[in-house]
Amino acid sequence: MTMLIRLAAPADGAALADIYRPAVTESVISFELEAPDAAEMARRVARIMERMPWLVCERDGEVIGYAYASPHRERAAYQWSVAVSAYVHRDARRLGVGRALYTSLFAALVVQGYRNAYAGITLPNPASVGLHSAVGFTPVGVYREVGYKHGAWHDVAWFERALAPHDPDPAPPRSLRDCRSDAAFRAALGAGVAHLRSPATSP
Image 1 (tube, rainbow, N blue to C red):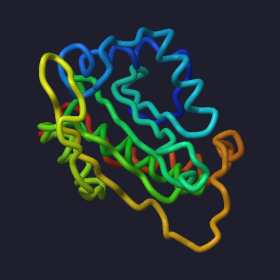
Image 2: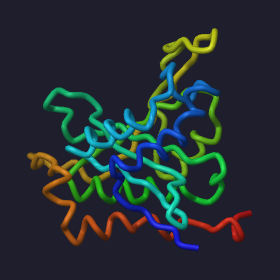
Image 3: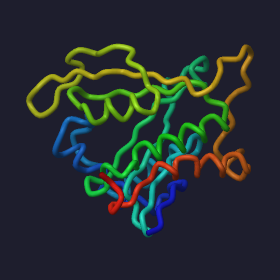
């Protein structure tokens, strides 16, 4: 069995849409109300990867999970901070995929020069809270009844994680295009692979 983590491509749109769909249609994990199709997911990959990484985890050539970073806010003083999300195919859970993707994503973001990561989690979601805690996030606070979906109001908990030291006078983050061929960036993509487990070895 071959498992790897790589940069996503628009051609992954159908697989990404399949992974993401249940979070939209069957739960309140995502606050979207209509699941995006393959073409929309392909557009999102292309848009995100103008600046930041979108990673996928493959098992024997099949995409089983993904994680990406996006701007935390657009104003200039926020440029060193990102929001992150990860989704794993329902048939590939408990294989270390989420932790592996985040490990690689954080390493890649450090190479680019980002300093902070933030994540929002609709409550209750003990699995997601557990994953984010395991990879170093700490709670910031809760937005009470901030989203309405499936006939109810829902809370969102926010978490933060430092990616790198907060040096004075930091250089602007590098674009993905500028660093994706660097040896350090290529090594970062593989940083999480050690966390991946095959189904046969998963508890």
